[in-house]
Structures are given as C-alpha cells and as structure tokens.
Image (cartoon, rainbow, N blue to C red; front, top):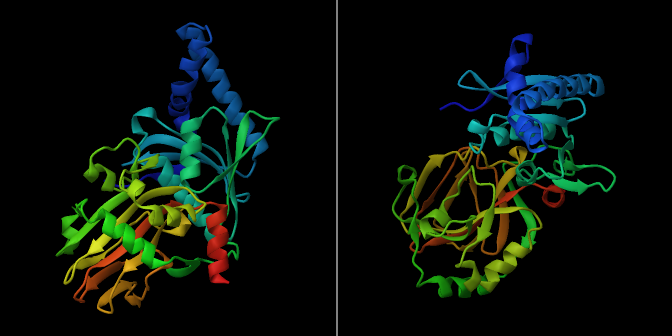
Length: 350
C-alpha cells in the first residue's frame, strides 16, 4: 500500500472540499439547533469564506489535495515561505491510519533542511489535532485572548542537518539498571514479532506501550498509528529505568528493553518513521553489551558503551550481529521531537 501524496488543488476539487468541510461543520451546526438542510447551506457558506480568508491572509500559501492511491482523502494548506501549516484535514473514514502524521512529517523534513522553525495552530477544543501535533514534537502555547493554541516546532539549534548517529550529553549509571534487569528476570522476554528481520533470540520487555494495551505482546508493539502511550506494569518495578525516562523532557512513545542473544543477527532494514527530520526519534541506552556486538548504520559501525545515550537515524539502513558470548540488552526509547530535544541535539552536535 502506498503512502499519501499531494497534488495542487483545482476548481474540479470544489465539491470534494465542500464535503470534507461539511463532515465536521454540519454535525456541529445541527447540535446548535439548525435542521439538516440549513446546516448544509451554512456549512457551504462557511467553507467558501474560510478558503477565501486563507488566500487573503496567506497569499503565498500552497493549497494541496492529499491523495491515497490516487484518490482524494484530504486537504493541506501550507505557507512554505513561513514554514506554517495553515490547515490540514482528512476524511473521517481515512483517519487513524497515519496519513496526517506522514504529511506533517514531510513538512518537518523540509523545514529541517531549510533550518526553519515550523508553526501551526489548532482550536483549543480540538484535542485530537493537538495530540497529533504534540506527538510530532510541536510545543503548544495557549493564548488567553484567542480560541486557538499556537504550536511551534524547532529543528536542531544549529540549523544544520542532524547526523545519522549522535552521542547525547547524557550519562546513566548502569549498575542500578542491572539491578532493575534482575528484578524483571522472572517476567519473561517476549520474542520480537517481526520474525523476518532476524535470526536467533531477539526479544523485548515493554516499559511503555500504546495506551489501553493490557496483554504484554500488545504493550510491546510499537504501533505507528498510536496517538497515546502509557507506562506498563513492568516499569513500576524499575525505579532506575523510570529515572532514565524522567531525564527526557519530551513526549515519550514506546519504550522497550531489547535483548539480542549470543549469535543472534538482526538483518539490515529501515524503520521509515524514525528520523529527527520526521519528528520522531529512537534513542538507545546500552545496559549490557560486549565487544562482539557489531551494530552497523549506513554500513559503518556504531560502538555504544553501557550508560551512554545515542540517537540513531534508523530510517537509514541498519543491522546488528551479536558475535559475543553474552546477550546485548539496550533500553530503547521512541520519543517525539520538541524544543527541549532539539536543544539537546544541538548541544550534542556542538
């Protein structure tokens, strides 16, 4: 299945755009007391007024139709010169599939390459959109005098591209982490479910997972469509790992302990959503390792000692082989990019 694509709006899209706007506007107008026909008429007027308002307020904005497999499913209005998302909307039937997230992540990549800070705004009551933007690392700024919330996303402080590997200015004592591992020893490791990616023992214990997940396997799944995450019961047993997570003042998504047994190999692959430029990063904190671990990113080795913290751009080709006699165990943190994390990356590069 292909991902979303964009094409310029045309006059032939007007009927689709009216229907897209009406999906939200008509139910709200009916709740306010209008009958269905009047609500539809007023929604059409509101849609036309809003589109004209966008063009007057943002004369340089690009108006695009979001496509999936060639079919219109949404709209994006972006002022590229100002790095501003003016509006994004997706049909209800196509939501919760990562469409808006992918479109916004592509915009973040453009901003990052240009060294720009991005911006957007959402109505204070639109909690779903607010979660989406915050999950991509936007920082919310409520305004007392306005009904909307300003959102700001910052690339690395230096404005330069983030390298494929970056040791972060954070160090953790591995001894308490080993004690937490001993506590979890009786819990049992869960075999990684993407069996085509590896041979041998590659297993996990979930410390944070999709909100509402109750089975350990569901907790361990890093669902790209998940909008909310929560600590698992395993984390409650681990004060040292909890302290590590508390050091990250950014949105935490899936967090797992990942074990690669002796002789195990993770074949080269890509995790397409995991790049700073796309608003979501993966950070490795080694807990147990050995000289026989060979981690390759873009064909070059990455050596990570216990207690260090590393960003790895895993949207690039990577794989690992454990040729040692002991298991390799990392704390693996998926997080959203926000101004705090962008500043941390900037200090790491400096």
